[in-house]
Amino acid sequence: MEKEITNNSKIGECSVLEIKEKQAFPFIKEASINNTNLNDWIFNNKQEFDNKLCEHGAILFRGFNINTVAKFEKISKLFDTDSLEYAFRSSPRFSVGKNVYTSTSYPKDFSINMHSEASYMPNGHPGYIIFCCINPATERGETPIADNRLVLSFLSKETKTKFLEKGVRYIRNLNKNIGLSWQEVFQSNDKNHVESECDRTGIDYRWKSEEDLELTWVKKAIWEHPKTKQLSWFNHASFFNKFTLEKDYYGSVKNEDQLPNNTFYGDGTEITKEEIEEIINAYKKSTIEFPWKKGDVLFLDNMLCSHGRNPYEGNRKIVTSLF
Image (tube, rainbow, N blue to C red; front, side, top):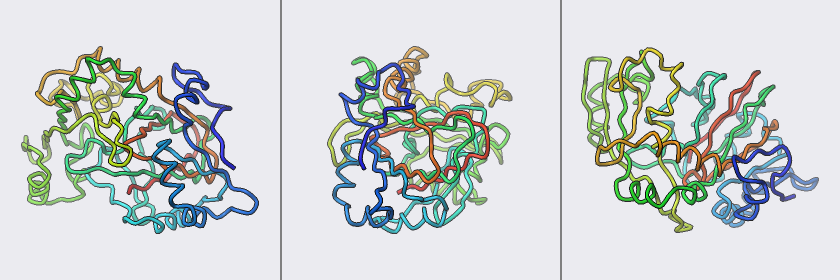
């Protein structure tokens, strides 16, 4: 059974009807009595799966009983490319299977802002991200999603032009006292390995101390999707910016130079607070939320679709894998 989400949905400042008119989002495939094996359905309908994912950016599979990590791992074997290790990480995650991770362990009472997974990575990025609901939260805990093509359409011409021409400059300060350590980010205790990785991927680095490493690089902000050829808002410009960081979470930071993350235009000029607010509002206008159900599997084209996380109560367990 195929349908669109209509009930229990909240869509930023747009009505459900407006989103429907722009694009059915996400596309939903529910198990039928005669078709309850998700692996079989994807294998036998690979072209339809690819087409729907390109068209809608997100596919929600519901009722296929993918309620364990072992079942979720089997899905990855259907794809041409191997699932990816969560490298150059920006949040703490824990492995629960072969390249299967828990969703971020960011405190449950905080929201996670909208973003496309690892769009900040200086050398490549995941093409797809898959979520599976092993256990839903008792309250809230939705994973909001937004069509990045819509996000781009809601930005002013001036803002789009600046990001298109300049890109985004990312600055990360790796220090375990204010965020993630360099050992966690690079999954290594070897400074020589870290420096080699930076050289290989085009990252400028500066050791402030043995445990304090500053990284800087520039990347495009607006991308042409390799299959659809549509332009998409694909970056961490607002997610990593100083104006969106949770003050309570990073209360020990004394000045901007100590922030775990910050962003600028590619030429080093500041992204203004007003421009960050414009980006956040564009996400809000493009975002839809739905309650997780146990066994749900959500496929996202990472360039076409962004996601976040709402605060929650209870023993929420969402696992994820990158491709």
